[in-house]
Image 1 (cartoon, helix red, strand yellow):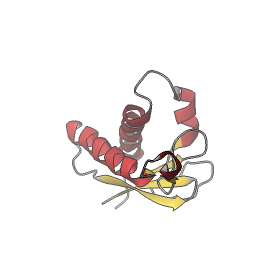
Image 2: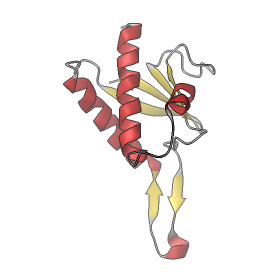
Image 3: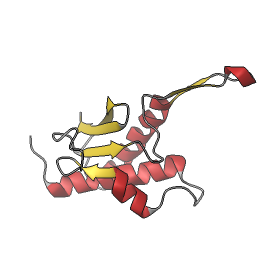
Length: 122
């Protein structure tokens, strides 16, 4: 099923909001221009890595990639997997879509490569 540009824009908006809430909730961090540069409508992204996706998220300038793993063993800590953050972002984006009365748009992220996440519908 092909989705309209309006559907893709709504999904993009939900992910922008969810990412802001997850990582940039303190008023600092990425600016609107950064999101415009790094979160694109599928099929319109400059790299066009996943043209069949609803949204492409570039993880090169501040947005953490889902495939990254961080070990804090040398300071007595554990291991953090960014995929855990993206599971929470997916849940929040879907909550925002539900609040917009679009529960038909149930989205999830999938790592396309080490710098690009693609958003699809489940």
